[in-house]
Image 1 (cartoon, rainbow, N blue to C red):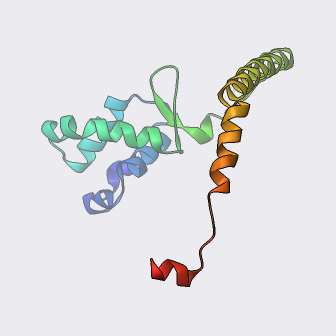
Image 2: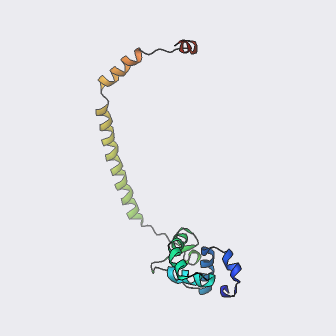
Image 3: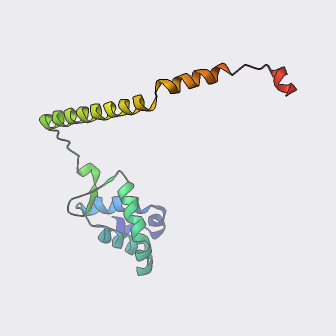
Length: 144
């Protein structure tokens, strides 16, 4: 039991590790304040420390893949809550077709913008500018 562990042993563990032990021991989901209160009691933290650290504690749970936040606003172990992904094939096909149509429209608009931006006169100007360019050797560069 976690309550029987020495304080020195508890202090070595991270809040997330302590949370995992608490959730395993309680064998039920718990909300953030309840979990963090249990941790603060185990470690002997004051009310001020609780208030100062609960935001960071919540963030650590949210980023730790061992935990899942349930619809009941409680945390539980991910291993006890497998994620089922159900895809409706008809809906997926409709979404794909809509995305393809949107992509075609954007591509057509983009091509029109490019065509209008590049005109023959612009290309001729670039060709004329290129005629004035010459390649210099390293020796010629050093002379200048």
